[in-house]
Image (tube, one colour):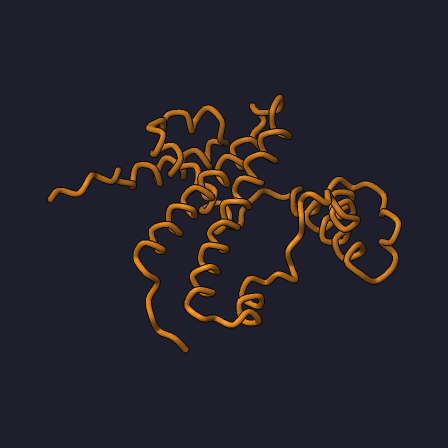
Length: 189
């Protein structure tokens, strides 16, 4: 296996794209809050697709480098996991609609009684709906959200806004994250 490190310019470009995608992910979370009722549909879709597109750019940038350095096309396709890819232009599929039906407690859609992805996604949605009835206590998920909110608040120099749109426990965690972050200073020569 090749142990050559990623070239520094490529590494920095990937880091920039990932940072941009993370900020879009934070916006997705932000627009799910109750005070965003008037705009959540539009903005969550915009920011989710922005994040997906940005991560796609990162993957393709890395793939172009791998291609340039002689990686076989079969290996590259395997690493890109093209078999799992879904095209948003095709719109939601039956399994997506089944997932929403399960989440919202709607009747099972056609095909949910047969083995396959529609049935599986409907069941997955039902389990998620059941989980939503309990408090969100998954520490990893809570910490991830707090980190995203705290990072964004620190970068926007608006830590006080956290209290205006987050539940108190999440706002406190995000504030701790923001307080722990140091703003990067330009390098001196």
